[in-house]
Length: 136
Image 1: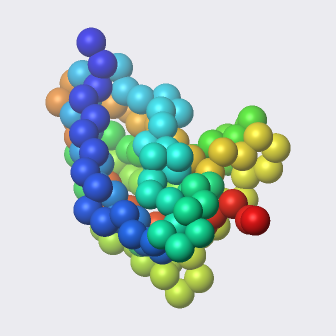
Image 2 (image 1 turned 90 degrees about the vertical axis):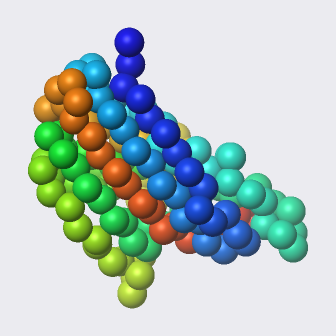
């Protein structure tokens, strides 16, 4: 059996995506699982270019019983943010945004790893992202 992850697209516009994720753990946890797959986000409505990356603007989270680590996907994954166990908060980076600083093999995706997950632990994440597109 595996953790149960559900996702909801709240908004997927030309510039902004707002995505909600909930996880209920069976105790196995998640290890560098794809949370945000940029290839599934809508293309630029004007140029039709595919979304190739995102910048984190805000995150609202609630972790019950486990911590969560977000990573930028690359050949060697790069830490994005650690969210503590048994905590909830909204973190606003919108004044500057957290861009993807992953190097070699960067995909643009965001991965999730749970820390200390036991059966019945949960997390809720709401991410507000600014989308970027391949150059012409």
